[in-house]
Amino acid sequence: MEAVYIDKNLELVKKCMQGSRAAQFELYKLYAKAMYNVALRILNYEEEAEDVLQEAFLDAFTRIVDFRQETTFGLWLKQIVINKSINYLRKRKMEFVSTDEISEVPDEDSFDDSEVRLQAEEIRQAITQLPDGYRVVLSLYLLEGYDHEEIAHILKISENTSRTQYMRAKKKLKSILEQKGMRDE
Image (cartoon, rainbow, N blue to C red; front, side):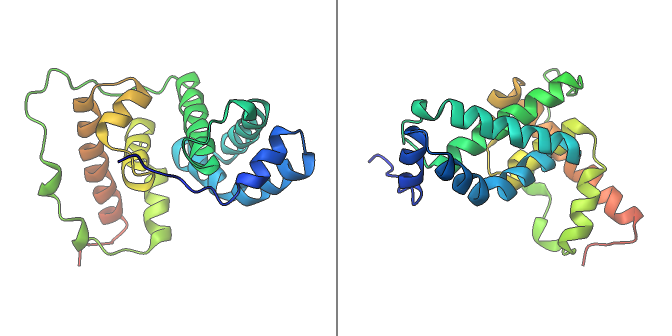
C-alpha cells in the first residue's frame, strides 16, 4: 500500500509554480521558523542557519516546478534545508570519527532515555556544546526522526559510524549535563 500525502498548502505551491510572489511569501511565513530551527540544530550557529534558510527557500522556489508532490512541500523543503546544512558543515571540514574497524557497537537500548528528565532549554544548551559530528547525528536521529541508514546516506558515512557517533553523543551529552549538576532522576 502506497502512502498518500495530503498537503494542506498545495494551493499555495501551485500558485508558486505559476510565479506568484505572494504565495511564495505565504509559504515562507508558514515554514521559515521550523526550517530555521532544523538548520540551527545541525549547524549550531545562528548566522549560518539564517544563510541556509535563505538559500533553501531560494532553491525551493527556483526549483518548485520539480516538486512532484510525492511528499508534502514541508518535507521536501526540510530535505533541502538538511542537505544545505550538511554542506555548510562539510565546508567547515567537520570530521566524523570512523568506526568501521570497531567490531563492537553498543546496543542503543542499553541507555534508558526515559530516566533522563531535564528541562528542554538545558538540554538544548548542552547539545550546542557537542562536537559537530556528534551533534549532527544526534539531531538527525532524535530530533528529525531519521534512522541510521538514512543518516549514513545523508552524511556519506557508514551505518556503524552513525550508530557509534550517536552513542558517543548521548554519553557526552549526559556528561555535560552531569557537569552542570543535573542528574538522572
